[in-house]
Image (cartoon, rainbow over all chains, first blue to last red; front, side):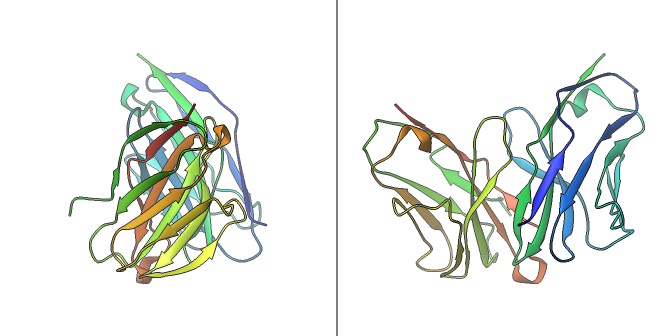
Length: 111
Length: 114
């Protein structure tokens, strides 16, 4: 079945550092790929998505590129802020919109 | 557009009791999904509806769980004879059929079974 593997956390960075959170997936078809973010005390929010190979999703300075050859969708940001502290989930959706999630990576950004 | 809402936000119950949660999707969203999330893990799919029809159920959804969406708008998730292992966050999401891959999540209902 479908699965998503995320880089284990927690990740702690200083403000303005470069962020990478690795995500790889297994799917039988051609899924859409997503990054969701969950801020403390809040619900899941869609951060960005990509629907086909080589697409790049971007939002709020975050980027991720759909790499079919390596089955990866790594999340990057060039300069993180304290306000980026949250839990990040990688997910895929292959059929009927049902999503399969990774276990999440907790990011803490220190001033 | 007020987003997806869920009620209650927190529920504490004793083992063996029945509980029911409600989800109100974004208006005009015809797909509605239920997920369960335990501490330190990502959400796991339970079931989804298109309008009032329940189209798929996960093997995670035991016979003690039942979900309905009688008029194709709000949905309820009932757990009968709760067990301690049912303690989790129950998440609801909705989407349009035309954009099935963009799901909007509610804040969740946190269930604690004592």
